[in-house]
Length: 356
Ligand code: UD1
Image (cartoon, rainbow, N blue to C red):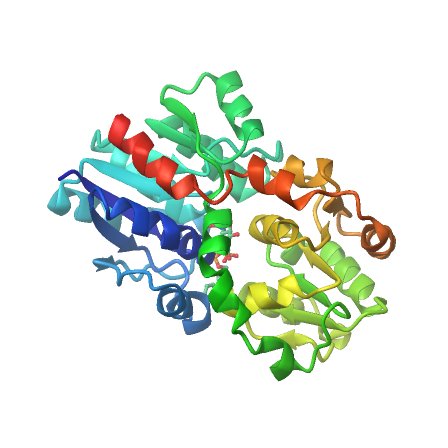
């Protein structure tokens, strides 16, 4: 049986690994490596527990740090594991520092790389994620694209690896865990009425590390006419204190949530405001409009089908987008599900690796 070594480290990668790991283990021996990029119980353990992800075979415990130090520590740690495990494939997810470290370690040892969520582009080279994506795609042997748009980027870039459209594994996860999500008691616990609140997340460096952008977003949120529930990434909580913005605090600022509670909240929200890539899609998959607190998105289908509006980091644009977005009903959820692979991406990934 071929051996696949999968590298995860950050919250969205745990979610993506849940359906993919299940599919892979039907045909391959999987070795799971956790870099330790995310390490708080609420940022890591809860996902393994709730989503039934197998315990990592290797935990590198790298933790936080400057980009170079963090990526370098992961690179060294993953290399040691690769030399011991000798896998036939290395599989990496998305665009985090864990992704790049996994790809680079494998490339140097001439181990074939499969990249899940290949081909996304924002065109914004100041984002660490954009650097990670482009470099990982350049090193990959099998590029598993979630959308036709991603496929076109890879064709244009003439990457050396083989490119396959497989759909989006986050839709697989959503479909897989929908019944468990329905059992969440998060709305009751937080005292929220279905359809009468906004869900907010902000964690991108471009927003959190820029005091002007972060202040604009928080003051726009403070003027929203809806109650806000804002599960806050530890980075954001830290930067709000560093930038002296704690006076903009609201009762809805809570600790990060697990996947099931988060999606239960999103599914019943009036609107989602976020700078996360994953939540933009998850809102749309659940038929909830999204206002994206960025200047670009890697998911143009969500804009095209009417589920998403870009508002940058500007209080007035944010408020205007919430008003117009909430009254819009043009989007089609089933068309969106189809474009994102209908929940069968993990199976297509298994087949693509088998066929390569
Ligand atoms: C990372 C990814 C980002 C992804 C996000 C998902 C990179 C460059 N960025 O961003 O693409 O969208 O994960 O959440 O890889 N911290 C804790 N506890 C934790 C994790 C982080 O307190 O468990 C704090 C630390 O202060 C740390 C900061 O958050 O320095 C940033 O963490 P880091 O992993 O560097 O990047 P994220 O912002 O989480």
